[in-house]
Length: 188
Image (cartoon, rainbow, N blue to C red; front, top):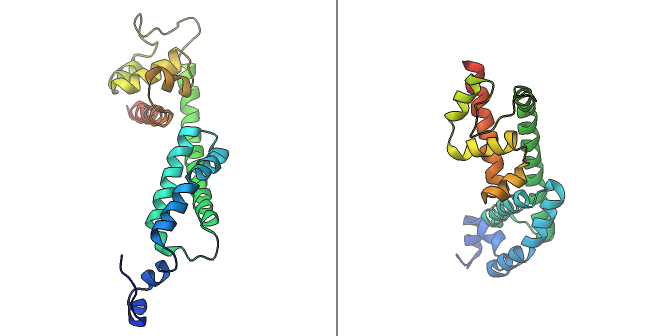
């Protein structure tokens, strides 16, 4: 790291002058020590441990990336938790948008299966051949997730456990599959 040796250096490198107010090693250690608290904070807002861990990683990356912008007007903890709050809020809004976008599709898809024609993945095709063709074109992982979700009526966390995947991976594949199906179904 560049050591500030004169007034001229602080004028040329204002970020370095700001960074010189704290020791980078000490700052890094403080950030790392606060990571469990950031995870708890994110978990409080998001109510999903895997998502909270993922968002807390983003928070830590942003904090390290923008360490020179830390102005020391507040404690490191306050600064870090404000970044966490902003990240959690963004993630929550994104989840709400995705949930609203796919809620109508979920309802439409659930109604396409009647109670007297139960879909078994190995025995018979779904009652809608157009939908069956679209699902058959999806990657195997997405097909399996959809089968567990709709035929086996499992929740996403149960699917994650059964498939030995993280919950965020299952959610991502599930919503991508729904989006693909919706797009193809509506355009054909």
